[in-house]
Image (cartoon, rainbow, N blue to C red; front, side, top):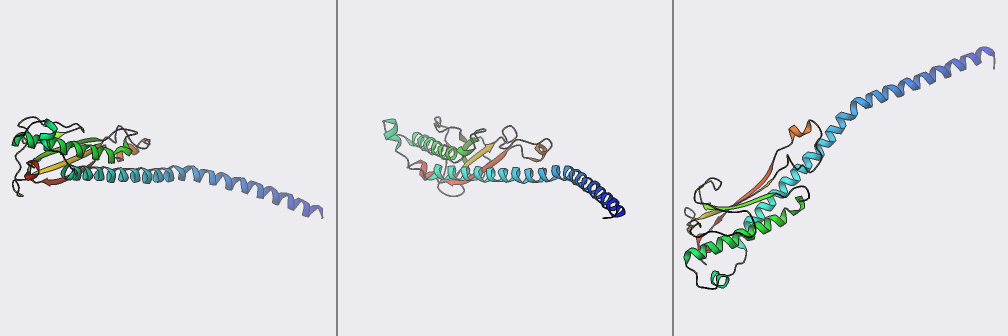
Length: 209
């Protein structure tokens, strides 16, 4: 190899090395710009996937609790209290038993969320056409050991216009107990609370049986 060819090869190798380093530096800068965007996109999809799953779980919990409140097999008032029951005592016993059973089923269905914070479960019974959250003729239950006081049971008829409704609300405080750690700025886009709610009719004849 002549001296001129050798010099040419050295210069070419020097240029190739410089070009590779420049390309690597440009790639690193591009990655530094793109990675945060990709990470936020991925984390946002993951977060909203979890939120959607929890929302479905809360709704399922509320629906199952409402069904249990309507269809749970119950004992008789006389057998539980040890004496014959009048109509008011029978209604109180039936409501207490049904709402307690509904709460237990809702809590069991939502149990998989308890590792961060237990959902808040409230069952209410009030006349059809009223808002059970503000109605004056409402009884509510927030535990499995539900006790309806004397004279508190609403009057429920056997037809649609005079029957009562069972409303089950299951709420999760996502703002204070998020399932995934929040990324600064992303918390503004996530819901503060998640809720599932179910509403079913309660025939008044069930409270007198």
